Structure formats: C-alpha cells, structure tokens
Image (cartoon, rainbow, N blue to C red):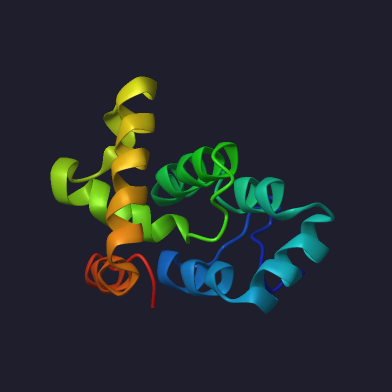
Length: 124
C-alpha cells in the first residue's frame, strides 16, 4: 500500500497509470481490496485528487441509473468531449441528456466509441 500512496495516504499514481489500473478488471479488484469497498466508492476515493476522473465517475453513476453498466464510461465521455471538450462544466440536466446521446452513439457503433475514447486518451 505504501508504494501506491503518498505520506498523506493519497494515491500517487500518474493519471495514465491510474486510468490503466482502473480499466483492468484486476485493477478494480485491487482498488476494491485496498480501499475495502465496492467499485464506485473505490473509484471515488482514487479520484479524490484527480480532476480528470470527475466526469468518468459522474458518467458511471448515470449509466448505473439507466442499467447500462455494460458500457465503459470513457466511451460515453469520448462522445461528450466531441461537443464540449471537458464535460465538467455541464449542468446536471444537460450532463444527463449528453449521457443519453452518448449511449445512443455507442449502441449504434461500439467500436467507434472505443476508438474515440482511445483517441481522447481516456483508455490505453
């Protein structure tokens, strides 16, 4: 655990390394084990000092509300970034609408969603 954290107990992974860790199924398991909780709280704790994770966490919550946990949140964020750059500034209603649009885009072409997320640097 000490290797992963700074003296204050915060995870000290670079953004790309943290992304890769959270994208891997074993990484989520490791994060859950270290934090001692389920996926969303673990991601929230890991993201507490990582502004780049804010949108991903919010998209994850929106996908869970809709029962669409089969879609990786970065695939939705890729579509949102095409329109807004970084979607952190969107009001909750617009954010939810954009998640719906992202879901429709993903359902139309999942491979394009993954390519877009990769091109935005959201997944490795």
